[in-house]
Image 1 (cartoon, rainbow, N blue to C red):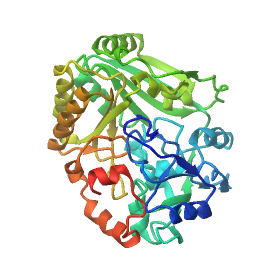
Image 2: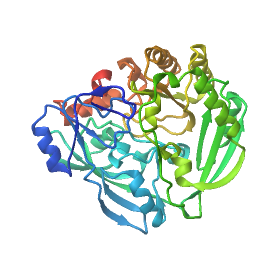
Image 3: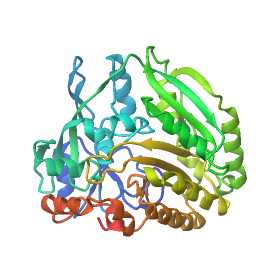
Image 4: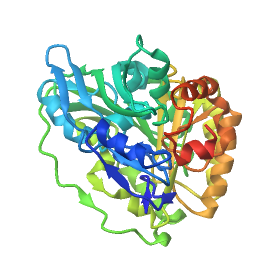
Length: 423
């Protein structure tokens, strides 16, 4: 059985690893539809297809790199975790990075990832110069904001539904070193967390962890690149098996949040980039903490004017049910992404992880409704439960559908997510 990072849902099909366009074409010849799968870090069903899933782990080569300008051309199967030490050795870093380095370049593009610097840097799509994509008819096409721009912007954040991205050219970020100067600010409630986040607009990077069971108190982390070489990466600790379901309950979640909050100290420190950007990567298979049934993530972005009331309502609903989340992350987002299905928009993003249980599925329905009523948007790379009505805040959805109809009228590239949401 194959699932996303949340292990919910799963399909009785495997992933076929290929080394490029010929392998993808061979797989297309034997299946009515398929979907590209990067490193399997999409939480839900975005990279699941009951017929065929194609992996490009063997297509991970650097095709061209200019150390003076930071222009990089790379195959889509490259994994960010493997790439970053090499980039940093040349004085460069990814312009945008998600919260894990265990992702592929192609997957990052398909989700048009955003990071802790979204206010200033936008999404990854804004730093792409061109992509090479394999279409439903087997042709290879290079597209950019100036060449086949309709396909380019439909593919940026298009969840693999326009074709298989084989390579990309992107502009990197010049950095002084591999360290991060981090400032931590502990807050007493949601109002203060939001206020400190707003006051952190000028920080290159900013993110907040909140205690969703205690009124939104939390810790706001600001960061900027600093001089220094990162120490050797410590061996990641491993979660060897799925935890029993009973270990995740309101008491253990409350205890963890309380310990984490009181252990955090306001102040500054110089830390390894991995610790700042990818803290959970230090624990291999951390998804197993949620048990064999898997986990689901709820992530929405609410308009600026509705964020305070909306987030307070979401947290109140979670508390009312006596439930909670270990990993509650709050980020202030900037301008709308240029991809037709890009997730971020101006306002606050809230991400929460839950065990996949019937009670949580009922809660997610209510959280989705609250977010949508506030004019919010759900993140397709994280969602695994919402219905088609959740797409109403993707204002360019019809434009995406029309472009997909042009380039893939027979839906050769399809996923469980696309079918569930009727994209």
